[in-house]
Image (cartoon, rainbow, N blue to C red; front, side, top):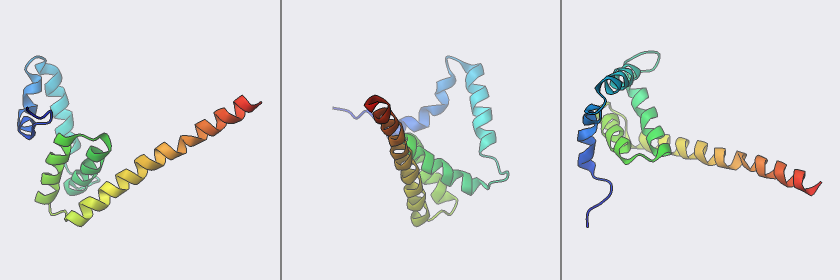
Length: 110
C-alpha cells in the first residue's frame, strides 16, 4: 500500500501549470517575487515560511523550507523555535475564540 504524501511529488510542483499556464505563470511570478530580498532577508522569509508551513500543515512546504532554511544557515534550534512560535499563535487563536463560546453562553442564559 502506498502513502498519501509522496515526498517526490514536491519536484512535480511546477507541473501544476500544465492545464492553466497563464495562471500558473502569474502565481509563480508572485511567489518568486515574495521571496526576493526586501525589508526582510531571504533567510528571514524562509524561516517565516517554515513556521507557516507547520501552521497550515503542508508536508511539502515543511520539507522544502526545512531544506531552504538549512541552506541559508538557519540552525535546527532556530527552526524549532519558529515552529513553537507558530504553535503558540495557533493555540492562542483557538483559545481566544473561547470568548465567542462564553458570549454565546451568556446570551443563551438570559
